[in-house]
Length: 72
Image: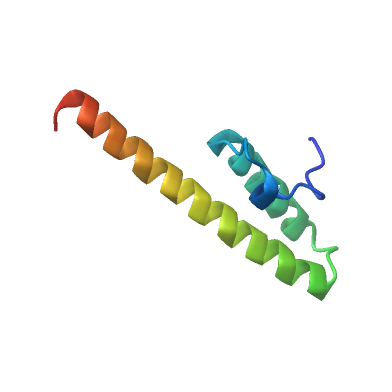
């Protein structure tokens, strides 16, 4: 799996849902590994929360667009 440890999605203008999801999966695997120091664990959890918020916003926007297209 690609190493996203230096990936900063907040600075990325081309963030996609797929890249956010891949980053979440990477973070999950790091946390499950149990080798992260406490300081890194905290920052990874914060990053994951921001990625989840991004994904939720993206899905909400997409849902509204689809509803508009189908006339709901």
